[in-house]
Picture 1 (cartoon, rainbow, N blue to C red):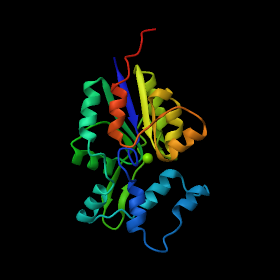
Picture 2: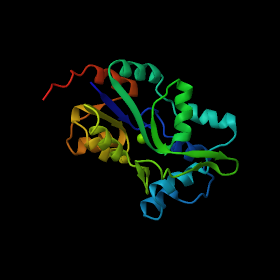
Picture 3: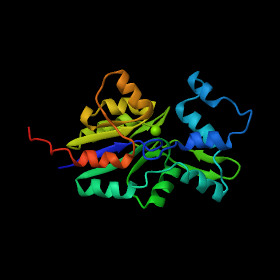
Length: 220
Ligand SMILES: [Mg+2]
């Protein structure tokens, strides 16, 4: 039996998005309206993320505090371990950056595949976001095509679950069975509006408990 949970990171494994903490703490007054430019179609989602992350703090203590204040699920490592023991792999898909995701995962003692935008810290330029043109899941406007990751998984695993909270999670979440769909925040409200089934989660680690209680799939 092979199963996989494809999961968003910011606001899903963590309570708070990195970019929203950057806005709250480090965006200078009078900064251009990045989100407005995105909504007006003048910036791609990737370009908007890259602009925000230019304000990411590069001073180590301030950076570490910001990453800790995203509040990653305190039971992340044990939940990933229980999932693996129960036949579930975990893969992260994020329109943010693998630079901070890997750092937060390392702090939690977790190692799972991450499909996201690479980046590097440069003093004076914040977290410089890069497009991963070499990825099989490359998306020009977002950086990472979450739906393509789910479609690939659907072709290779018996069961594919999806967890997320934001607008970029809607299309990939719709590709999986309602019983394997986990949502909160904007995504939960949108699924409610569409009258579509899903599990609402409060903590990411509770998803593991729900998945591990499912019965094995029946042979065709
Ligand atoms: Mg999110």
